Image 1 (cartoon, helix red, strand yellow):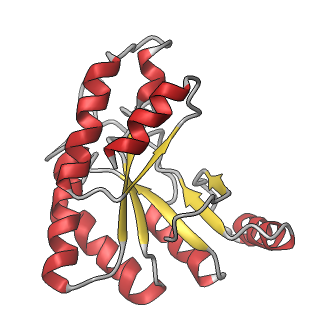
Image 2 (cartoon, helix red, strand yellow):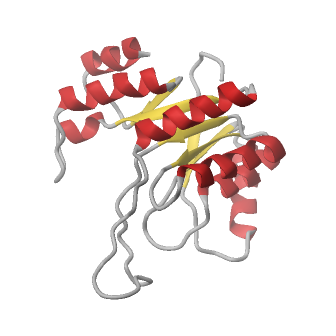
Length: 196
């Protein structure tokens, strides 16, 4: 990914079996000269997989940035899925996120609500992807999330210093770029920019 301003449209995976909705979206984005699509990962029920959906948009000629998470997956399974998306569909960028906790428990089995299962968190997945690209001599970029917005509002307020320290760890693990919600203070943007 070149170092310039990128307009990216985020796509939320759907539950549809018929792919016509996404074909229409791709056509409309092409008409508007959108070149990059980032594909969200969802913890709310059974939806299309972000890597598979990103592969579809890549096949339509878009640069894609699928959000991938270690939630409810083994690391080797995520790496295998990415290897396929890279080799067969040219997916050259990923955004590693922790992944929201599950909100749809309609398919829970047994008693009680089942939470997401994590073999590792985002920093561990970034490390694994970085190791994969070095060992296989693959050319792709790894993005990470900077969760700075939770430091200012929301029910799960995080400490800004903690989030910034995690951003630095993500960089050490192998992250090449950062995606974030809007930054409301210029000083926060400078911190994020200077960490990478």
